[in-house]
Amino acid sequence: MRAVVYNGIRDLDVRDLPPPELQPDQVMVDVHACGICGSDLHLYREGIGPEICTFPYPGGRVLGHEFSGVISALGSAVEGRAIGDRVVGLGMGGMAEQVALHNAIAFAIPDGVSFDEAATAEPMSNSLRIVRKSNPQPGENVVVFGLGIIGLGVIQTYRALGVELGRLIAVDTSEYRRKVAAELGAGYLIDPKDGDVVEQVRELCGNRPSILDGDVPAVDVVCDCAGYIKGFEGKPVIQQALDMICDRSGRIMCFGMFEDRVSLDLGPLINRQPQLIGVMGMELEDVNQSLAWMAEGKIDRKSLVTHQFGLAQARDAFEAQTRYAESVKVVLHPQE
Ligand SMILES: [Zn+2]
Image 1 (cartoon, rainbow, N blue to C red):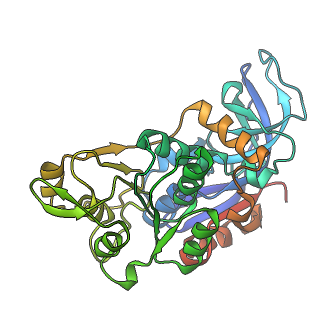
Image 2 (tube, rainbow, N blue to C red):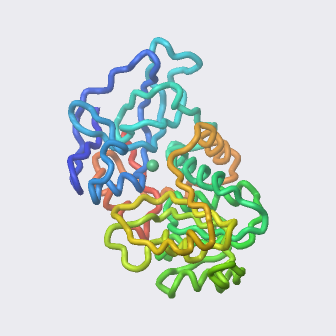
């Protein structure tokens, strides 16, 4: 079986490995689509997190955890599945022709949802988790930093849930990604290159009084889907979030990974008492909800798949995903 193996920083190759052995409680999935995740990029560029981003075969560490495909074999203890069923897998090693997956983490793909769309169910579920944990209320102002597939999925989720937000503001340096965010329902767009983001947000949301920090922007929720990229110039997003959050009732959702340590002024955390909420992964119900929304046409994930490559072009695929300004989701097709 051909698979994309991670060797080290900016070093991966497509190798022939023995196919996985099927355990009684597993299904074999012939993978048709597998997305490149932001966490795969942290690994590719900086060597961060090989143990959470790859599956260790004797022949090498296989990348990929956002995949969809067709069941081609059933373990002896598996019930309620048939060969030919289309599924999304929540496992590792998806950038390969085949994956053996525990049946409990295989999710049926509804009719009408393509393999490429279904492969985005995993990041969509992350977005859904971020939004659910942010507990959005009508009239609240929300700022989303980082318009990769997670931030864009966050915007889709706020819209799909139908919460009547005040302002939904999307922040990113990529013009292309801002344009996509607007199409998906972001009401306001900010380019950090146009000046201080906190001040730009203040202009859009207005001020609210705080007891200790004077007038602060009327921002109820910040979703940090950017995190910290090594070498980033300017204030880390988490600092900007602290600087713009309102008094007492604010929530800052921390999802984007940190490639390095950052130094922060925590004054606003103490003075304004926001909740700093970490988010990682998803609940199983989020995956089914994401797939159902795709089937109902409530969210459009097709337009977020900007590039497709065969497995042999894995390097080109990773390079395309690193070209941040023009790509959203790059998908590999292991059967091609
Ligand atoms: Zn991922």
